[in-house]
Amino acid sequence: MLLRLVRTYLRPYAAPLAAVVALQFVGTMAALYLPSLNADIIDNGVVTGDTGYIVRHGGLMLLVSLVQIVCSIAAVWFSARNAMGFGRDLRAAIFRRVGSFSAREVQHFGAPSLITRETNDVQQVQMLVLMGGTLMVSAPIMMVGGIIMAAREDVGLSWLVLAVVPVLGVSIGLLVRQMVPSFRLMQERIDEVNRLLREQITGVRVVRAFVREDHETRRFGDANAELTDVAIRAGRWQAAMFPTVMIVANVATVGVLWFGGHRVEDGQMEVGALTAYISYLMQIVMSVMMAMFMLMMVPRASVCADRITEVLDTESSVPPPVDPVTALPERLTLELDGVTYAYPGADQPVLREVSLVAAPGETVAIVGSTGAGKSTLVNLVPRLFDATAGAVRVGGVDVRDVAPETLWSELGLVPQKAFLFRGTIADNLRYGKPDATEDEMWAALDVAQARDFVEAMPDGLDSEVAQGGSSLSGGQRQRMAIARAVIRRPRIYLFDDSFSALDLTTDARLRAALRPVTRESAVVIVAQRVATIRHADRIVVMDGGTVVGTGTHDELLETCSTYQEIVGSQLTAEEVA
Image (cartoon, rainbow, N blue to C red; front, side, top):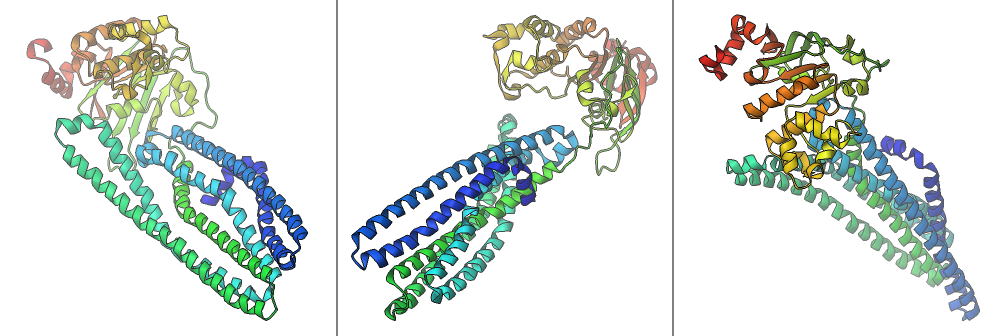
């Protein structure tokens, strides 16, 4: 997975990658040439006392060193640009893929895990790409070149190199094999820490209200300790690598000095050649150390690449139509025809054979007990889920055949949990209509009964809203969400329990203000409160995922026992009469 991911997202950077390889090759060859020059200076300049030879070849060494430095700096610059571009493209791909997910895929992965994959996992793979351009390219060149140059200096000591390289390779391979499971577990532990942190920050009010700070601190402490234990275990294996390499390198150096000293004494080898041989041995060991450093990164990056690829390879359960409809009739009727929906792995469907029609200018209310399937029913219209049986039609066209942008542009959805984005009041309203004028924004706020508290803010429409709308009360957030839907003037309104945080007076005023605005639109209202929906043109009563009654308020009081129970639990006998 790692190789496939890197190959796919580095393809646009083929030319800069070729430049990195060329620069690293030139720079490494220059580094390999330096010990040989140094040996010549010792044997032909220092030993013979030829100062001119020392100066000439010393100048050549400086020139070769300059070439090495320039090539190394340029290679690192190109490699850094490639790695940053790779990370940017990969994050954008994950973001686009997650944006296409339905609620089912988001629930499957979980928000904390998706955030970790988008940030930490991408960073690990990006760091591997960066180090690969600087170390992975030069390490094999230096290793092969070092072996060749060492053999060129003295073939008699080559058996030492042939013994050192396999020992280093086997030692490092065994250590890396131990690290892979720890790195995989570490990413899972990071997911868990993120999940707990997100949960506790979001629910901080509940934690404090029930005096559960100590309990939550222990939960986070346990997750944090588990992550620490795994990280320490992986770190121990990593820490063992450097001493292992140094032991082998030092033993090899001693061997070269011992056997090389005897060869110098016997006249089979020059002192400069012995010095160069030691330098080449160190370069070979350095190349192995660079490869080791890369191998330390590969296991964790491989785990991260698997997690990233899992997201990128997941197809949405709500696929776009092959031949999408991009134009809908002028008057849109919303129709649910025998709709059934079951969550994956569930024993029973949430919805069974549900049918209803909402015509333009008509308000249809859906009411029922908690868990009756009301919100699930509404979510089928914008295709947050797809019905497992039956059809949802808009203007006579199945929503599965409508282009997503066309469908969403016709809907004004106010979800059960009103969510506002960080920014200003105006920014949030323009989510509904990007080119909305100031007059249009105030008009939408008038309809949503939100003008009073917005005008009371210091900066009016330019007042700041905290992330999630936490700086506003529940009722204010709901009214802002309603204003955001109203400002786009959709042809179908979907209110999913969007009036629950409003007092009865505000609720009544808001519904009265909505009537002229929604005169040409189909309106579907999901509500728990009978006072909100009693004047709807038609009320659909749900129980256990099925429709148990349809009619007006008065008709249902006569014919539907479920509706009678709901009404009786909320209104007094005098109010019912």
